[in-house]
Length: 418
View 1 (cartoon, rainbow, N blue to C red):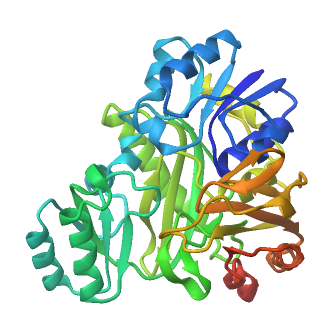
View 2: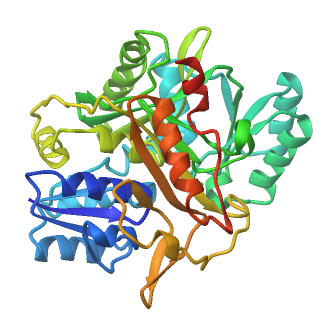
C-alpha cells in the first residue's frame, strides 16, 4: 500500500514509524511532517489543512490509505472531502469529530445515553458562570467548548483561579471562537488513564491503555499542557477496569453516535478517571492521543496499515502486543505552555534514534532546530515501567538539554505501585 499520514507532530512521527515496519506498506508520505519524520517517510510540502492539495496529491500518487493525525483537519471536514472523492481515509467525518470539537456536544451525548462523567453546565455569559461557581465552590474545572490545542482546560483550586479562567475564556476571548462557550464541571478525584480504540461504525478494537502526564512540572504541578510524557501499559490499575471502561463508556458512546446519525470511524480516545464510583469520562478526542501514541504504537506488533484497511471493510482483526513496557518523556521549550523561544539548536539529537520522536523540529542547512513548544519525546522499552523509566532518564542525562525542560517523574506513580 501507499499510505499518506496527515500532520507534523510527535504523534504523526509515531504513526509513520509504525507504518514503516508494516509489511503491507510500500511507500509512506507525510504532509507536512517534521525533521524526524524525513527518516521514515517522504515529506510532502502541503499544509495539513489544505484539503484541495491533499486530495490532488492522494489521487496523483495512488494513495491507498490516508490517516489523519491532528484534530483541526478533522473538524474542518477532511474526511468528508476524501470520501466524496472516492478516497480511502481513516478518521471521523466533520459531524462525528464533534465529540472532540465541542465539549458541550460530548457532555450532552453522555448525559442522554447515561455514560458516566462529571456533572456540568454550559455557559456563554460570564456572570452566570460565576454565579454557578459561587453555588458549587472549588475545586472545579473550566473548559473552552471548542478546540484549543490541549490548553483550553483549567483545573481551578481557588475561586480566584476559577473566575480568572472564566474571564479569560468568555470576556478576553483567549481561545477565540473556541471559548465563546464554556463547560464548567465537577472536579473528579482519582487516577487518570487514556483508553484509545480503533473504530468503524459498530466495530471497536481496543488499544492498550496508557497514562499521560498533563501538568508541566514534577509532582503534577503547574499549568495544563498538551502532555509532558506517557507510559504504557498501565498494569497497576485494578483488574477488570479495561473491560468495565469498554462496556460502560466506549461501547455505549460508539452506539450512541450511530443512533445520533453520526457514526464514528477513526481513533476514539477516551480520557478517563478512576473514581470511587468507577471509571468516568474526562474528555473524548477524535484521533490518536499525543503523547500516548508514542508509547502505545511502538508496542503494537500487528501490521497497523493492514488492521486499518480491514477495519474500514468491516473485517475485525486481532492485535498482538509487545509485553515490555514503554516510558516516554517530552522535552519542551522553556516557558511552554506559555511564551517560549523557537530556533533552539537541537544538533545533539541530529542522529536518527529508534525511539526519539520529533514534534516541533525542522532542518536548516543540515542543522536541527526547534519550531514548537513540545519539541521531542524520548522513549525507552523496559521489562517493567521502572526499568523503562531508568533507561529513558539515563539517555536524557547524557544529552545537553539546555533551553529545554522535562519532567523527571514520568511513570513514578506506576513504578511506586508495582
